[in-house]
Image (cartoon, helix red, strand yellow):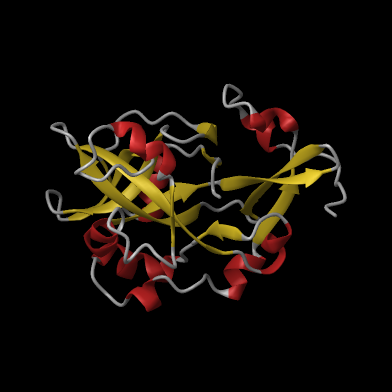
Length: 225
């Protein structure tokens, strides 16, 4: 968790929503983001002296890694350990970001099959996942991880973990660097979790080659247990 998500908004929409300068280049919408895919992120930039919309490869690769293969296993970082692990701690201290998403997917076993569910904002607004980033190699390729925390409320029906969703009042403190880890990594407020819709969707999302808005269409409700 989280191993797939959707991020389909335009650069212009994301730049306006997060009040960020666009330096991301051409970002294509994706309804089925998979590990190692390019994704948008929001970070603080010393060069621009402002918040910027940028692009990163999903799956953090620390600067000391020999190659990019490690990133496929580093798409998530647990809130409970991110501040202390060698792989993540430097990025948590100095290179935090927001990872925009429309929603994310989880699978729940239902008989012989696994039923996919899509978690998204009930009012259609973008979600901001807490993230960390790093630069790798001579070309300073940006890579990133999503911070996860224990699931809350109805989200526990589909998984015991969830992305750490940050409300707008937490963005500045998260992006600033430094700060108290316990406060920065506290779970989202009850109201934030209550505003997430849990939606059963079709099996098509299980294939990474499928990518279109039909993957988010609800299907008939199923019995979880």
